[in-house]
Picture (cartoon, rainbow, N blue to C red):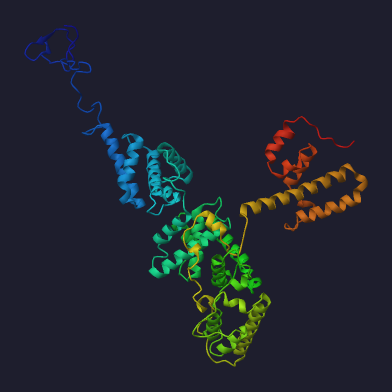
Length: 539
């Protein structure tokens, strides 16, 4: 036997046939690790103890595929629980299994995929309110663009068309936000239904005014909820809190809110006191404005009547309750009968206000209504001044005059309080026909850019034709004043980088129509850096 003893280094080693171990004949030491035997016999040999091919790891009895499916289903249940879609679990799981062919998946992409399937299922179900994509993306943990791409892939794979896969409805999103809102959770059912109908009316008016064109719907929903909360005197309605609830951006929601207020101010200009209505007091005047819009939308298009005549204000209730209300001016007010005499209309208390047909029997021009309003305002001012001088001893119970409590201004009889098709919405008249704000802003930018082009041409002419220097200098000063009137700087500091680029493009013979579009980088690459054209300066 080869080798030496590990103890005495002797080479006299013999094998013991009973134990099959090597033993040193000199010292009798049994050699260690000498009886190792190879037990592997290829793929058909015995399997190891700790590593087993086709299992999920140490001590696991599941195969890899079973483990993957188990983890995937657990992730699906967690996402659906956070979305509150337990009733749709079977349908969503079926869609996930059919698309992945029962293989499911692991990784971050699978959570986005489950959220996309949940979104598509809710869009397909016409009986339930669809959830916005922002809500799904916040639960899944991705941005809206990544989720939108996955939704597009799911819709394309399932080959879903319009009747089966309807468009996203901003009205349904508003109803869902109102139903699930914690801020509006303490109001009664009657108030909630009134706010719902008012919201549908306002959103469809915003659709007609193109305020929703190309805009994210959740920001519009947040703006309308905040406005209705202020209008119906709901406490703790802040645009930051509402935007957080509907998963909208705060700055975008504020911009939509401002656009809504500006549109209502434009509508209010048709009222006799419209010139006094602005963004600061539009909430106080909103009941009259919305009532005007509501009745105007119910009028027929072939009626050729004055807008103010078609507005069926409850004049008797407005004047009576305003004059008798214990607000700023307390009990020392004009008599109710005297206030009604302003209108010179004999009203039967049993019959109430005359109908629209009866309104033709008398004429109320805008000048007449303006005189009524001014006379009423003057008398209110006199009463307030007399109270301040000490003639009135009663204390004011309410310092804020809420014009909304004068009458029940909301009737909900207009068709715009119900869900209508886009064609039906556009056919309605609500007192304002507005162009899309993006189009209006783009026209303003084009006009401003045209002014810059004309100013640049005059500056170039001043250098190329010095003979007309006096006129050109005057024009140059005027141009600088126009460009820098908002900057409060020196006149010559009004020229910025855009003016210099426009001058360069004009010197390289670029058409003015192309400069007006504002694609400066493309035009500079095309005409300046790669053109090889040298500007033709005067000698």
